[in-house]
Length: 277
Length: 306
Image 1 (cartoon, each protein chain N blue to C red):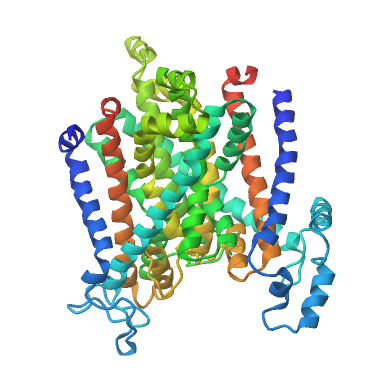
Image 2 (image 1 turned 45 degrees about the vertical axis):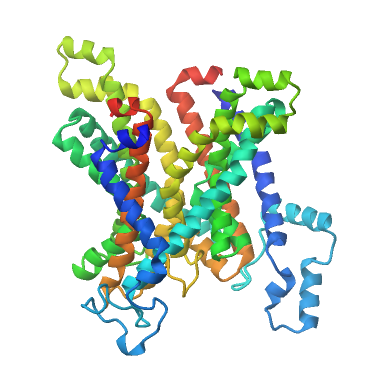
């Protein structure tokens, strides 16, 4: 509650926070609010420019672009949320374990993690998609694994600090084993910073998921996705340039809102950051 | 310094072996029988068996692994499933094309971000700074496949000034280089700005101003030199990200580079080419990272003694 009270003072953060909530609401209710069936092919109305009937026009199959953009919002939110969750589920236990264990296990694990961090996420994701396949699940797995090294680093860092605390020493003295200490004592104390970090990386997931789809390695047609819609629109750029407006705008607004909300959350939690800016 | 360079170069050996092992595993991790994949789904059984034998897929895994490792170490990455050319022949020219794109984009991004970052820090919290910050933020949130399409529409189709795709003349370089460079410039401008804001707040800046040094010298000599250390690291990271971004940029502008080769080979299931592209990309990333480390040690001598 204290957090909300302080967050409200940040006008930019508030505006984009509301915008982000609206986008999430659109994603959750996509099936009910699309003005037309996003999958319905209508060959009599191919490439019709924006009009009162089709606000963003229709594509090469006569499908309503606005409806497809709305459904794509749902697809993006679904894919990126699961990918983020997957990255946390893979990265955090590994990071916590090696941070708590220390010694050569930690040294080797961190060396490998550093090696993976050399590669851009999109590269790792492309390589993993070769194995996991260009499907929604495949993208979730690929982005999740590609981002896991980041979470290993974060989880290890906070675990290193937490394991020096008195309550851990007390738990050891009481005879608890390491699984019990990690799950019951350390996790409750480090979960907040990790969850905050996870939400902050959301824009990265969105950008990479749509980049994969743009390359044809992500969500496959006919399921709409912003990157994939832009890829299709590119072929008709000379005759129907309006096709890129919807997906491009949705993508940029979503990433922009997520970024600004992330900044605002960080500043609210850590007011020192604001002074430096 | 020499010891550092040799140590770093030696590190590339286990890294390369690790990558080759991964590529071998990749061949067997992909769902489906590799022999059927090569022969095609409708190939008769006899053809599939012949391919399986010819490629050695019927051998135990460790024998296959040994053979693959030996072949790669001799510079043989196999032949393309479609063109039947050796993979190395199709990959090497692509590396040069990608290097040109990435290098020029990075150069563009470095110049733009240094200028904008410094100007923004000089006019800290004033309208000019706010404008730069907002533009940079928009740049970060606009992926290259959005800015690239907008640039193609505006400059190639609407104005008709620049070619849409390919790389046959210097005019073909402008749009891809600026599209990819602008995204990096946006990312780097924010970071250069915060490094410079930090540096301009230090005591030695007050001293420099107090002794009457002109503002130009204060910013570019006293502050920039001290902010250079984190900036060099950022540029190193940026180079890696530019290479990553080149994959998408090459696809937008039909640039005949390594990234597009890799994506196309995945889409057409030409696994030897995919493996070759991944191998060279990985080696390039490791090499770039190594060079950045060395530059860092050269700029800051304290690191050498760690």
